Picture 1 (tube, rainbow, N blue to C red):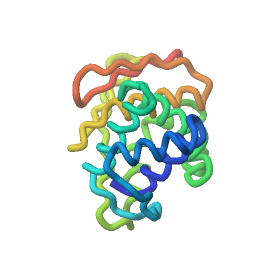
Picture 2: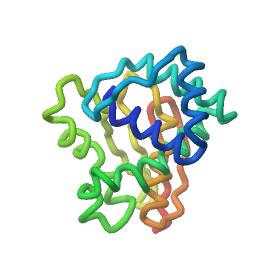
Picture 3: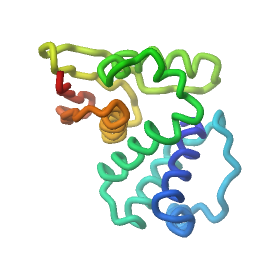
Length: 174
């Protein structure tokens, strides 16, 4: 996993819960000293998942709730600092979500070792999108949190439902 994800997680925990909770999460994950991270650093998936699990314990949050917190933070705060240009040209959540697969291809094109999730799209009807999540990481709860964050960014009340380990159903209000 790329360091940008761990950096955003760290920033979110510190901003919302305090530095001591971040440090407690690292300690509980068996990390005694915070590593120096760069956005393009490679971090073993197992290390990030261990930190996520520890943070759930420390913050008394389910993985789904932590994923929602992270999705909101990533979309509405963190990504606006470094990826704001990807939101330009999109007038609503539907337009943005439909370009996510391409955004992952473009942003990781020159990053060695990047393996972002990929997405396929299927329309159930004109207001209901099935987003197929393709990743070996099994982090669909984080995809759901990110989708909810996109809805908030565009001021839309999206209905987001996990319908499998690799599918999310999104109902748009229009």
